[in-house]
Length: 102
Image (tube, rainbow, N blue to C red; front, side):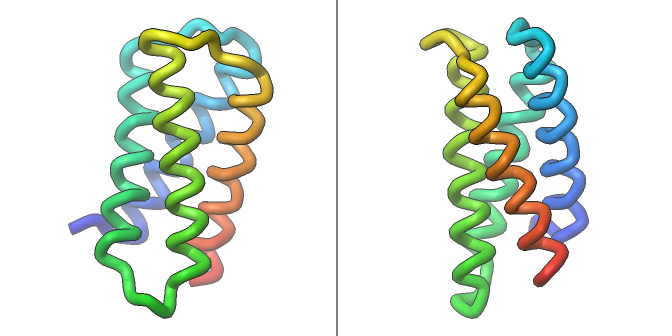
C-alpha cells in the first residue's frame, strides 16, 4: 500500500525532474522512470482513497495524467514543450498542497 509519505516523496521527485527539464528538455531514463513512478503512485493512492477525498483525488488524477504525458513525450514523442512542463509542474504543486491539507 502507498502511504501519504510515499506520495509526498514521489511528488517531490517529480518536481525535481520537472525543474531540471525546464532548463533542458533532454532526459535520462532515470528521470522518465521517476515521472512514471510518481504518476503510478498518484493513481494508486486515488484508487484506494475514501470518497471524502474527492478534491485530493482530482489533484492526483490531474498530476498523474500530466506526468504520464511528459514521461511519454520524453520517451518517444511527441516533442516536449515548455507548456507541458509548466502544466505538469503546476499539477504536481497542487497535488503536494492537497496532500498537506489532507
